[in-house]
Length: 59
Image (cartoon, rainbow, N blue to C red; front, side, top):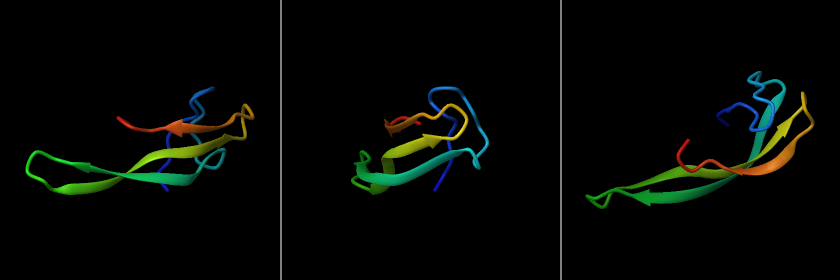
């Protein structure tokens, strides 16, 4: 799964910031084409200890 920085401390090392349990959604463009994308995921950061579900819409 793609990696993003920790939402709490900003850690960027993918070995320390894990993103798991993705939730998918579908977006439809003006022409009716549908695209599946990751809507939310569980973030776990080994640096600061944060563990939370993060909505990634717009990232």
